[in-house]
Length: 91
Image 1 (cartoon, rainbow, N blue to C red):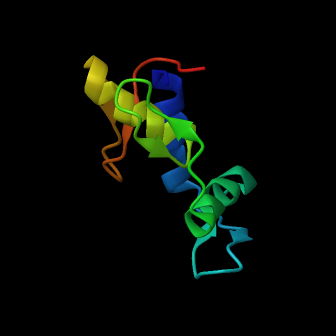
Image 2 (image 1 turned 135 degrees about the horizontal axis):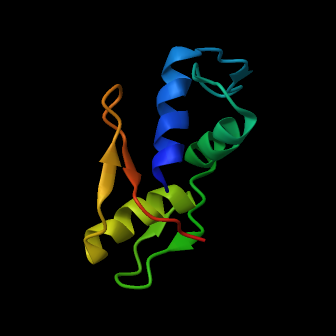
């Protein structure tokens, strides 16, 4: 994920509109895609597997963060929420 993605992520902290509530818990999300990704927490579906160690993840983003541990890829860190963002594009 590139530096532009980090800037957009940081912008999300400023423009706080959470119009997408989860019907199963109290969480709310700023984008429909974030709600959809969150729903995997409730279904426990993990369809993304690491080719190195076979550990499975619910989202491709979680898999990519995990893969950075195997490859040593540099991560950007958001200074607002401390979330780490990959410094490359995974497809």
